[in-house]
Image (cartoon, rainbow, N blue to C red):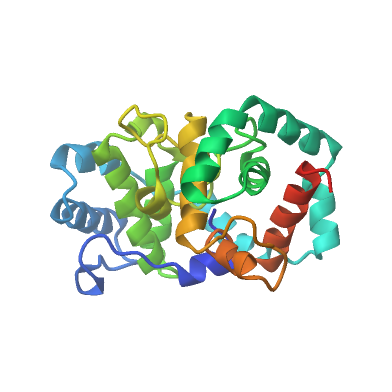
Length: 268
């Protein structure tokens, strides 16, 4: 769920503010040691910080991708949607709407977000959990980006949030795998969003956005609901619901694609 404009505006600090922030650049191991101290001050156990940060090294491929990804949305809406919403994905989404009808009804009742929007996001982000959710260790990815000075405040906060996910027991460290900016799970939540909006909707005591479809869809709905999305209202460009989806993704092209896909799922 991290996109170029979103990342620039989304800064989270779970460890007490910029005054205690680790200094970006310089020796990587010293930076990691400072981050471990911040994490422990924020309530992450020493055992978690040692397991997660011990021996971590920077990933040059992550930095290279970060330099490129700002140009993701230089396509027109027509160009972009033609690559993302085709007959196969529409049919797949319709099948899942039927398969998970009861679950989606419960989510609609609780959060007031239409199932078509949720399934559209699910399809776009990970092809309904069957596609690429990323293969990179999230802690290494976020440590690399946090150490880099371009957006260090953002990614220091995301690194601390990732450690909180492990501390809470939502995902074990071995399962904390994601994409090139640390996005996690079937709808690609940044760790800070995982902490803020994650919902245990299957009732197993954990928020699992990699494996639990109820948690995935309910957490996505919770984010949109908290951002002001209203059931039964239009969601096209210029509407309050379109603005509410800005918390999901700031790119206008992407939000228009969500709406277009939702309309196709409804048969419009």
